[in-house]
Image 1 (cartoon, rainbow, N blue to C red):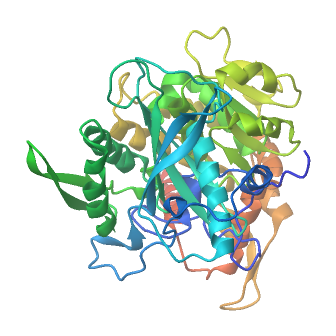
Image 2 (image 1 turned 30 degrees about the vertical axis):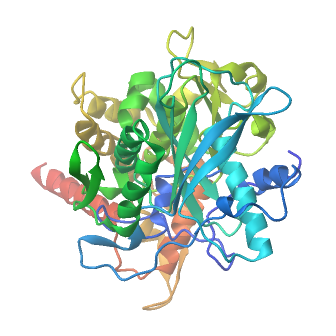
Length: 498
């Protein structure tokens, strides 16, 4: 599609790598966020933006301090090299001479002076992109008297593969009469949707009093180091009439799940429907999710990608497609896209596509499908996932779902590909291995499982997973290997009993 690139995880030097594919819960690594975050087709997007009128010397109010604070962590309570955010912007809808509302950045913290010309130009393109992700609907806006605030997220992916998360809260500013909504967007290298939702609650509370009250809170937050999994950081903030407040921000112990809320996924889809989406995702197909709410789109796509653990979706992922990029749906290569309901007719007139309607009151969930989604997964293993999901309560809490859902899906990969290490041949200690693909899938006794795995080994997510396994030391085990070892012990014990 007109040169639209497909983003893949790569090392800084350009070599393909699977370094992000395994990590135990509670361990903080710069690149593991790929599993929890969604990437945009950034090169294409920047190309579109650069063709717009972009001032060569942008106003200094639009420049920003992009580099994260590089300091030593104070102690083990803090994640190494991680701080909460890089900058906060406020995006407002301003009426143009043509009578339409255009998103523009009206506030930014912190500011940075001293950037050279090309840095300013590149950063201006980035800021322009942020405005479009905050208001993906384009110019279709009018002043409102009522508007329910919503929170969603996106990811900016640079050409070198580096990623920054965008967290956005849209709300109606305090005032009288009809007025357009505005958006608050935090750009950060860390992936933790729950924490940033709480931060937005504090920002929104202060915005209702005065824009000036946001600054001291964000300054305190910026100076605070990002806590390690299971730890808390306390932020002091003064509010007139209320005095000094202590805001406690705690990260969950299982840090690989902190960027996901499974409740939205299982509220929108039945267990059987989730499994069909999972099956199509595992085989790296083209999938479009459709909903009216931006938060629903971003949360569902986040949740679907986490179901793939320990594998990582390596193709195009855009949780909320801005209207200006709607042609991306024509790309022939795999993708996960989130599209607003009003654009549904523009994206579903295709073949070889799974289009999933998440909206309430829908007539059918799968607007478009290939027809084989229900038969991709081995029947026995699919039934085991369904049975495991049924152990949750009807109104399960986020904590319960974060326990039940991984316990339901992770065993699927343990049982289908958990024997991979036996088929990585090494010429000697410390030497990289060579994966024996044919012997690997032929070792499976179940015909249906072997049929599935034969297809799965051809996916890019599996290929990069194996690349990592081939390069790391044979005795270096991650969380997935721990689960494999647990399963193998249980199988041995079961065999002895019989």
